[in-house]
Amino acid sequence: MILITGATGYIGSHTWVELLNAGYDVVGIDNLCNSNIKVLDRIEAITSVKPKFIEMNVCNSNALKSLFNLYSIDAVIHFAALKAVGKSVNNPLEYYKNNLGGILELTQVMSEKNCFTLVFSSSATVYDANNPIPYQEGMPLGSTSPYGWTKLMSEQMLRDLEISNPNFSVAYLRYFNPIGAHESGFIGEDPLGIPNNLMPYITQVAIGKRPHLSIYGNDWLTHDGTGVRDYIHVVDLARGHLKALNYLMSGKGSILVNLGTGKGFSVLDLVKAFEKASNRKIPYQFAPRRIGDIAAFYSDSARAQKDLNWRAEYDLYRMCEDSWRWQSMNPNGYE
Image (tube, rainbow, N blue to C red; front, side, top):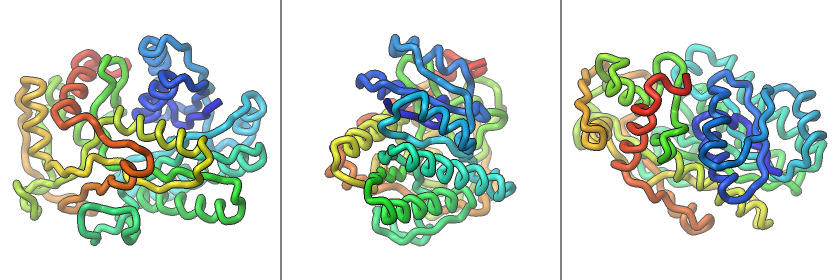
């Protein structure tokens, strides 16, 4: 049995689908603070498997113990965390309490229940912004936001845990900018309120929910002056988690990899690709740079290709096409 925390979220739900399609028995937990219970019906529609789900907070030690008593958990994929970079700057203590508390309670219960296999959802935000691009796994670490620091501190906690208990094996997956949706259009990114990420904002402009897109900075040292990022299809990302799980379950030990395409695209590149995929015009305005932003970053994903036999398959057009299908089929998200 595989446990997914944060299972009804954007990346969690797509990973749940990939695990079920691969034949794994899965139970998911989520406190639904940033997701929707209707995801479960959509997962069942895609996979023809009724999801096993318990609504709970991963920070609740007693609830976790009850879960591990109820199910024989062989491995955990840990997504449950607050994830908005900007909000973490405004509410740092909430992010430290939730994100570090969650990994702490989870690994303590895992230790007690003799479950030692963990796939950890980390982030490219753990890399020092002064690193040259592309980012490689061995580069210096640091962060410009409390969110990034919670990921970096979580990685350190897990490394210390591995030293203290060699039974543990951990896959540290540092991924870049997930966009896209399942090709069915049944599940996708459904942010609460004003989107914090670029793609759902673009799709909401396309559907008529937002008047225009704000692009923060047009004077970056990039090919068109707008910020460059490594956008990866969420299904490619989900399959990376499946590959990492299989790697750990085969007894090969811990692993640290980037999950990205290895290519950088600017905000305007993404807008143009989306306009082509959706046949919709996206009005935009330039706005001042945001504190903490950097000009460009993208991944070197050679290690994932070599060690996990994984590489991103979907191109930028497909990411935009699937994002638009999700939004156009679900103009109000899961509601």
